[in-house]
Every structure is written in structure tokens, then in C-alpha cells.
Image (cartoon, rainbow, N blue to C red; front, top):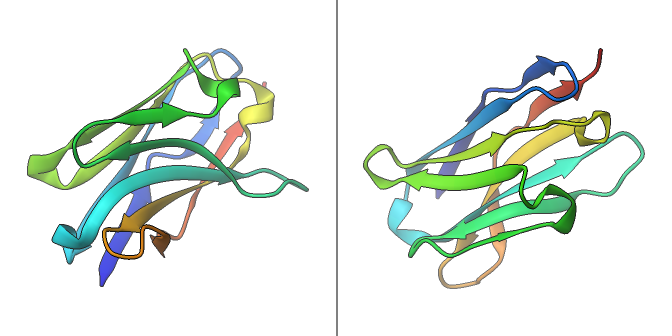
Length: 118
């Protein structure tokens, strides 16, 4: 089993920045990739960014150039640096891990609220 704990959410003004952290523990060796999802009010959950264990990344088109996903293997932590935040980025952000065998997002964190508002 893999446990994921997010932190770093909060209230920020439009144009501001936040950095989310996702700390992984447990069966770390079974992780193939980690992604950040978000679910805004009335919206479906969407994949925002993901990073594989060998460092490959991908981003949802609306966050390209504004968000950066990175990993620190020594700390078993993945970060999501969010710059130039917009009100439409308001959502609960979830960290999720892809199992190396199933290749599905089998493990989820509890979520952290990000609110972009003046």
C-alpha cells in the first residue's frame, strides 16, 4: 500500500503563487508515476500534471507555462508549483499515484483546497 499526504493549499489572490506538496510513504517501490488532479465546484475531476519515476512530465493545456511538477526522490515528495493563479484554478487538488503493475491511479491523498480570489 501507498499513503499520500498533500499539503500547501490555501487562499491566494489572482496572479499569486502556491506550492503543493505530496509526501508518499509505504510501498514506494510500487509507484510508477504521481499525478495531481483537481476538482472544482460543479466540475469533474481532471488530471492537471503528472510525473513518472524517470522524470517525464505532462500537463493539462490550461496550466502549461504556469504550473510545474517536480519530484524529490530523497524526500519521496512530489511538488506542484503553481504560478499566475486564476480564479478558475480554484479546486480541491488531489495527489494520486500510479501502480507500477496496474498502471492505474490506485492510490489517492485526501485533497487540499486551493482558492484563488481577491
